[in-house]
Figure 1 (cartoon, helix red, strand yellow):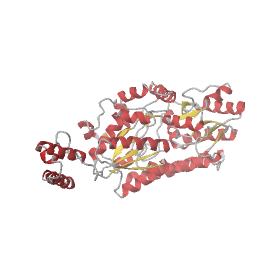
Figure 2: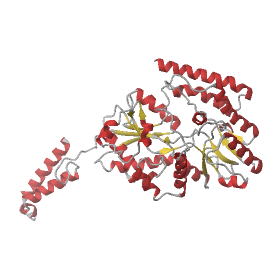
Figure 3: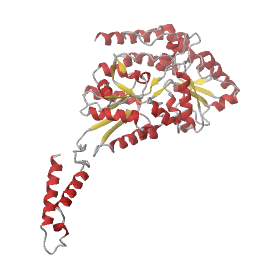
Figure 4: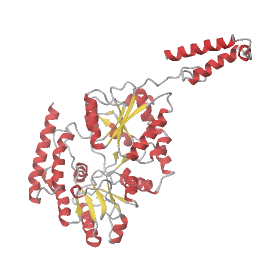
Length: 462
């Protein structure tokens, strides 16, 4: 601001010198009314970004250090940068530093930044991590910004933002909602003369995978995943964790039955695991011999990317429930959540960015449903008005789940869950790489649960 004042002073002196110019000059400046000179100074001030048309001071953001971080592939990165650049235009001379990486590296980097007290001002949070970061003091409570209207949720249903609440406090706002899915090529299914329901059981899914293989030779690319395990357990009326977060809430028998489904399909030759697939990208490309993708981390909003990579239309169905399930294990999930760092020096600006992401049509012109189905009613209607065929499929699938199929989302994973789940992931890798016999699975499952429980008990006691 001091530089701007000095600059205006120099401008005023310059104008004064012009007014006292040589008699050889045209004299136009000398004859200009004082009001014109004042207007010229005001125009210069406006150009410098120090005042608006009424003379009120305009904040200059050139010295503001503001960072936003997220994870994602090329398409999401391009879209998010576009959205950020449009936001910058609303704030004179604001330049936002962007940080993004693949999901696998993102939270490693974020945890390092949190330890150093150097988190970005705004950063994406995953539902599985929100408790850890909220209870660790790294997230700013958003309730004051919501109450003031700085983050306007007046057009948002409470159920759409419930995933951002920890211990009755709102810490994050979701970018949109989505669901875990199985992606498959409907043309191959038709060729085999088979059908697949939108909410299959494991028995139905296994029969279809084997049937397609027998009739077409095409295989399913499937892999166990802790998130798919969660869906399986929820169908049995169980959860991943006890309410107090001190241990897993399922048995070795539950885990064994879940893993045996994959083992049997691998043994039949009708399915392959991650260990058998080495090509980068989607496995449903023409000529790959793969017709289904069920990896536990496929989400409905990714359908467009997967169709682009595959070069053909694809279909969605929900992840399977156990044959003896008491309910459907699926839920509608906050896809990603925007949070504000508790150490940010620009919290008001951060809240303005989150509000922009919820309520500005430009955001949805750029990303449509890539970040999930919009949580604002008006933004959802806006997107549906120009939805592509792919976006319509996503919206219809979420509508199918929301219409009495999906059950309420489970509580966020407790602190220590990431470390505890490494033992489950190690077991899953052993199944994928066929390092265990079927008879070995029960003992390995019991061991993974025991080691995970020890982690949860230790972290809870700390």
